[in-house]
Length: 128
Image (cartoon, rainbow, N blue to C red):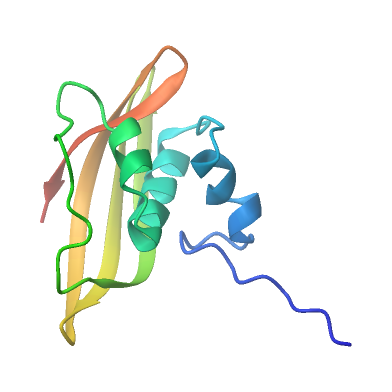
């Protein structure tokens, strides 16, 4: 019997979900802002609203995200363009591609992150 190779994590790293973003979704804190951003992208792919809200900084966190609104996006890929960290602040520039109702979408964002109590949180982002 042929052994099946696990699918790579949606975040784009060459690891299986269980060994990549899955560990953060299970409760391990992300070690850096880029890992948090990738895990948040994967949470959008998998519809993990609770994780997204828990990793959103309290100062900018919405009450809900309503990820079940239709039409649902089909997430197609993530490309990290740049990262920058200075102490407990960081930025991550990325492009996320999706398809909504058959139309291709491209979201280019520069996201801001902050580290508090040893954990990274998404603060906000500028969408281009």
